[in-house]
Image 1 (cartoon, rainbow, N blue to C red):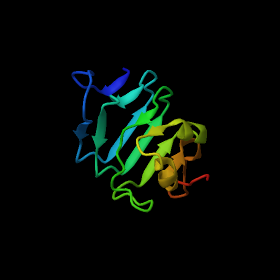
Image 2: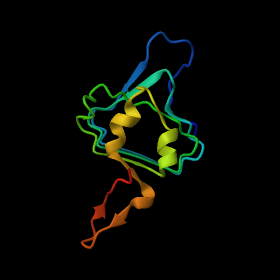
Image 3: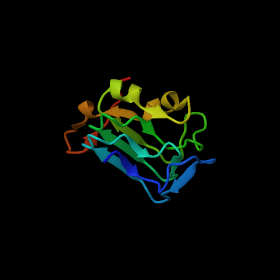
Image 4: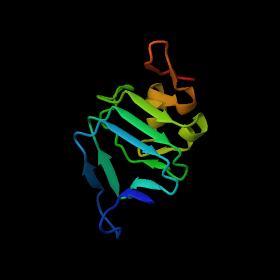
Length: 128
């Protein structure tokens, strides 16, 4: 699978196609070795309720089509965590906004740093 959400046509479009998922709280993509995009370059995924974005072992995936219109002063209304394999992987991802990587940095965690605390709860930590 090269594309998760495909549009019926990829011909010239004058405006971005908006794919709205208002109740999506977690987007987890794992072991999708051939995945190149979540949706076409003519599309954008709208989800103001997303809390967790988790991308693991999707080496061909480059673009994250989440608009960050609600991102003001580094704050996103619902986003709490972004999980990726490594720092190198994080740096290779492309966002529609040029400042997204800097603004989202405080949400980023790496899979190799996941561990469990003494009470059996998942513990997160940033390595930045």
